[in-house]
Length: 232
Image (tube, rainbow, N blue to C red; front, side, top):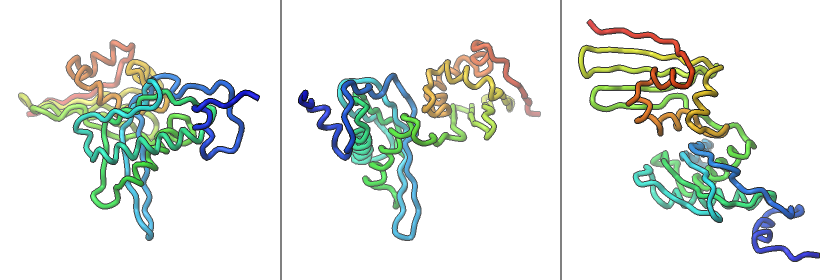
């Protein structure tokens, strides 16, 4: 009987089944902008933790925390510990992953290291398709120097981009992308199925807004619905 490798022994922690001879790499490719979230309210105590995480191919398992992520470094480390613990329970996987924490959302009372460890578990499960991702519903693409642009997803999958330009006479506009065309937007942004589309759109917002949202969508072969209004 062949001896197990150190990596296989690590996989066996918390797992009673056989260890596969050729574990699959995790992740199989870049999975950016995953929303790792754990929220629970009860009489015995409440938890709140939410993070925007990139799961990127790497060597072993490593943590990178972006500057100004919005929360204590200890919370990012706790999230990483949760990721590692969840992966240890999946012996068919060989972690080769850089866990990049882009942003943290923190509640002043209900957030803590335990909540973020549990959010790390949820992030891995989202990537593996073991639970439904929790999508953002609305994000700011720009809110600076008189130009305000937001993007949101309706329940039916329609993408809406709305803007207000106050740099001169007031100008408002709205773009509508049908749900059938949203996969083309996702593909252009390199979004994996588990990625949060709106957060990824926000990450690319400087390029999209600079080019013009309507022009950018047309370059993808999408003709969006368009409405506009000039102020008096």
